Length: 362
Image (cartoon, rainbow, N blue to C red; front, top):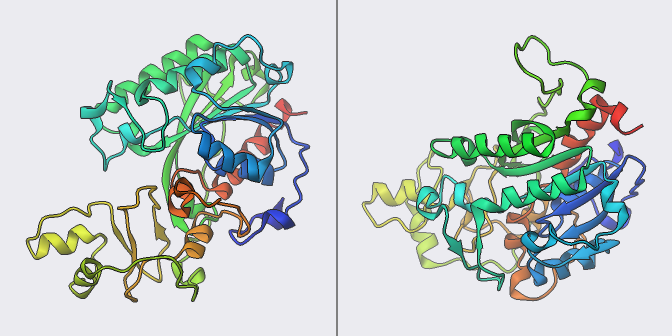
């Protein structure tokens, strides 16, 4: 795997050994997590995804053994699941997280059904995590890994995390949350996320004890990563493809000053209405800011009047250069990568789990 731990890679060149353990992925979107597990040597045997168009992209690139295209609310209640899904090493999932994003409505959206433009069924986003835990209780994998935005750890959302921990406890798991930064894990993008890692209680005695922590049952697991951040300059390309540059973009760019992080910094200074709160500047000596899935979230070069191009987005997300994004609207590169977990982030995380909890996989 070490030979493949580079943000510049291709599916056609990758050798997936599939010798570390079995994984099933929920809320899989474009398969960012799946590629991370594969790079780390795991066998991702199946997928659950509600959006047919995203599932089509996933299947085209990954050809899973099992694919269940439906909401997790119905998937978790199935009585016809393959026996192999009851023998998993890891159950993986990224329950939709926009309800907890610090750039969203947060509390105003909690408990409300949301209709997605991609044509999915209406869902109450903040209850999907509990459905995911219900599935874990049913399948009883050794380990459960769930990714979410760090906003879930802030303010009133902390109570939600406490309920998640209680739900894991009732399902038979010990859980701990870890805040991670992808730019410290070999990804040329500063994408901060929280990973909830849970281990089945009957396996806890096999694992190393926590060091120096009183009244903590969760086994020792070092989730500190200290790679040197990769600046945008390392992934800059001359491929000026498929990105529009508007008069408004030029207006903002002309009025930028060193230190501005977002369009909003400029617009507030010139006292104009801010409608680009999630649009950011990219500095050549820094990692790319978080790539959001929204088309209105622009990533603009600070030292060049253009937006980030598609190849740069693929590299910044550590997606393979030959990934097939399809041709329909849902397959726009920014949307797919913005909805996905960076593969190298997951590859480094699960490799650390494998190395430190090796006894669970032998």
